[in-house]
Image (cartoon, rainbow, N blue to C red; front, top):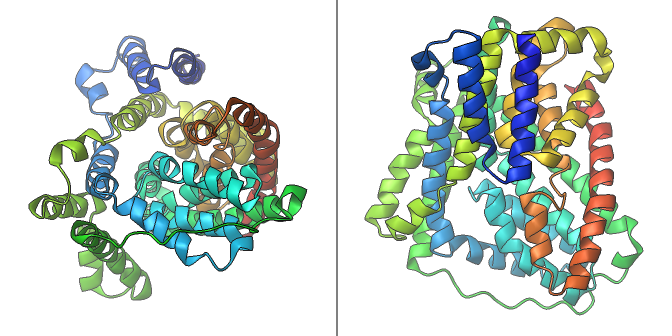
Length: 437
């Protein structure tokens, strides 16, 4: 009975957040308090202890550092420079846009930030190059999501934290490395994105005349602060990535293993934030103002409610139900479709991943499936419906259209063409991923 109440509370929190436009995390915290303290007898301090400090710290610290690049124009200049480099291959514009979005995301720009930069540029390029706007929209959306899945990028750091938390509840996977799992998710996301973009690029008649008449203006060179910011971004990526990669290459080296264990992306990001402030790369007030507090509160609130569900045994019960009622071969497909359905109405990082990730280690142990495959199926499935016009990315793309008629036309195509094609293709792809892993 209690498990049913907790599952219902998660669904109600998502619906209330969607209907009222109030942060879903607030409703999750309230439900966690009412159910945890009054329904389960938890102490208030114990409930507060469920607040995901580690995940919140990583999001805060990484976004602080990368906000310097957003504030001082480094990301915008990178976008223009990369597009200019692709000027000799106009027929490959969708893939060029995808590549630009991936690079910006890998460099730390948040999904919303990447689309905010690229959506207006993309709509303009589509009009000039006679390219289908839906194809351009899919390209930058896929790039922003796929690049964000990189282990040190905006989405990757969140998913790694949630994967680590999920593994803690299943002793069978104590030695599993979330960095490796996230790299797999990133790689599979890149491949799927390229396949999906190719379907839109070559499957629509409106793209037959693509590239004729497009022009690219040479961007202004990076100024001193932007160059410094770019160098710091690259240096931070090297520091955060080199030791985990060396540990994978030389697993028996104790010194490398010890150093790798001390390198934390959140703490490194704070050190680089101080360096950026000392170099006065952007005003401190503006950098702090851009921290995604709404996302942090959503993830933290959902994390508290999920932690209460774990305490009540709900997650184990759901895992057992799926394991006994869904054929093993179709479990990856189930996670893909459930992730897509939930993401259509809610946040992947704030709701979908915190709700589904805790199910995976126990289910993997019971069925023999690879947990990394199920994590990948969940994320890719959830991200497959992120092109929806009801999502933040879809709404940004629609807002970049010049007139109401174009906006209404693109709205219908995003909802009734892009979403179904993406979700179905992703489900098929996820079945292949599950077999490969």
